Image (cartoon, rainbow, N blue to C red; front, side):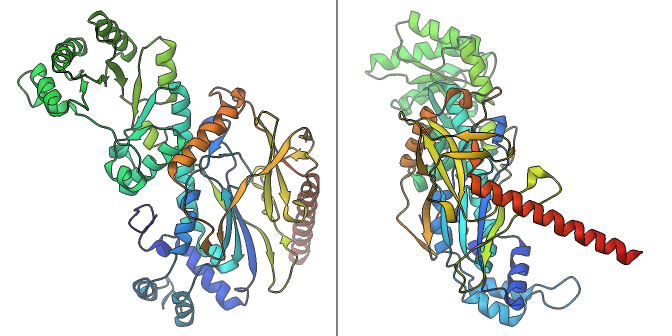
Length: 502
């Protein structure tokens, strides 16, 4: 990983929302800048109405932190900014401090390819409160979209039932960096290749591609285009057969396949990109088999997603591989994960004990979980996940296996028959990477293994079963206690304000 990787902007420290910097200056001047803090990244609902999410982007966190610096050019830019009310936005003393800033944070996160569920930490950040605040936006930008894409890809791959899926989404992705993120996250989620050549170079992902309709249209006859392409690419020959009439295209492909066979070559596949894909795939398969060409595969593209692929197989379509573009790259129909970054604990310099904090909110759904959180995943003897338990740092050694549901305190879980594993892995310590980044192939295999062991009822697309996530009893009581204290404080404040008005 290096700064040539375009998912890590050259000016990564400026890849942020302005309010991170305005808060940083306010912390710097308020005397609170030396406080320590803990923040967690989490999402409230599984994407795509599914039963899980696939963590992705976390493998790039360490590189982002190690390159998080304010260059002289960045400082000059910030110094030039004007405040809406007049005068400079940032003061010289703060900018001087920022020029020497290094984010000495410690970060734990879910490993790429592993599964993560609503409310539990995807990332936990600990360090100086200003440092924690300054990296917020860049961190969310890194993990939110890639986690969403990896989850979408995993669903598409599941629907493909072991048949190859290639990422064709570059031309519909949200810009060049978005295209790279899609290719990277799709591969973690299980895609076998990408059309994105730059992503192949940067991430060592297999690349795939043959020809478009324009190739066929550039020749007087379709069969002439097929013959020319076969002559140029005999070892990478997949013919797109639906430029004019798909059935005629298949017949022309049969002629070219036999010509290639006579030369000791083989037509790899034909691709269908329009029309009734199930009907045409059946026609292609029948005709190739009748002509003694059973090795020629049938590939399909054209706005595919997990539901379309599932429907094609339900119709008995003999399709061997899929090119999935727009709906994968744009994560249709859900454009964002909704991951948030919330303060969960703080302490003054020199203090050992953390003060847990939480966002109360009038909506119980938006209330956060306090404390320095760990996640224990309980698994059965055959490695099937039973449920996750969020524990507070002070009780991290509590392996009782009992928990209260993260939203419904009246629902109890008993995982005592399982074996716990810590889900959050160390990524960064005091601003430096713990270890070299792992190959994407490792994350891809981790995703495959995790989904293989997940209960099929949780993996299913329609009304998936809820995966249990709970709070260990002590943390559940702490959260309830803090909620009560916050409510009493707010009620007392409101009563006092009403008295003053009278």
